[in-house]
Image 1 (cartoon, rainbow, N blue to C red):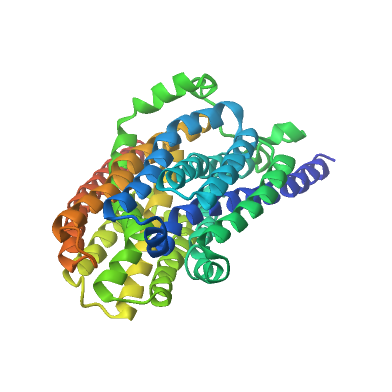
Image 2: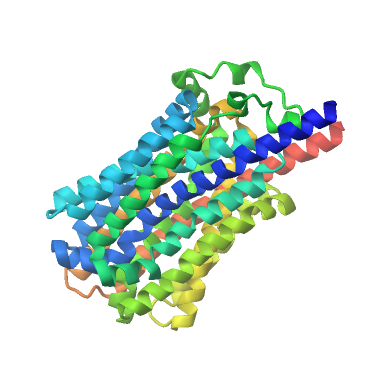
Length: 442
């Protein structure tokens, strides 16, 4: 009788967990889509709104810094109020921001639209993490988290060649309005289907159903207050080390892939729009594959080793591009962009798994928000604008921008990537020492 009851509970759990898993993946796809779109829309945006390099860089900075600054408060609020209500609200904000962006006829209105979108998409990753952590077992989490980020990264794929085709028929404004319409449907479904935790439908936790008891510490039980949660997270030195690691990879990958890649390929190589979108497509595919494989990499190597290998490999590929900045073939550019997407997501997805290993579930949203805020404010957000200033300074405002302008910006990123790699090996050393101590004590 007990086994039969358990089987019924497991069947009920599956009926809830997989639809919710699909919903948070679709929501996260919007994050990657909206983040990448300026790289493809760049030439049309600059022409339509008559933007120079600094203005275009500011458009990226406004989005990225809003996205970054919103991470910690959004994470804390999701911890307190739950993923269901939080995701419904920010999906609605994404719709509003998309409409503002699409109909904007001035630079100011377009920036406002991007800011509202950024504020919204800041919560999709964290909301997804909370749903996956609450509705699946601890053992399932690494692989399912990698799959979550992988399927979500398909949003970046849709923001390349498919978006280019859509823009051909409807223009960049019409394409964004179509995405806003699809987001309306997703918002309604999310509010109807999502639940914050199994207890809301009369179920125990997935770990308990699997026979694995994960005790809740007193610290965990006391984190209902977002202020206490944030204070406790900020006091963890290892999270700041993870932030520096993320900053190196994130600032390099996002500054290039989300903003400047299209301009770089057009100005240095004189490629047409179809060729540029095809190269960017490989970057997006790399994001997807890297996310899918990150969970298995963690199972095979553990989190610390995966982050060390990922950051080192990213640095080496970046150096290859920097030394061959104007002499790579289309095939080489496709390979390099694939590697950037792949290694970025292997590394970044693993940092979130590592964070889950460090903090209790009630602090997960806050911890992820703090690390993401740090990596994005001082990473992608700042460096997108720095690239604009460097490129304008070196080029003296003359278009198309010369290769020397981009090469200077690339070398700046080398320095940041070296710092990230040092942090990765520090984490690896600390993790190895901890493992050795546990082995000796055992």
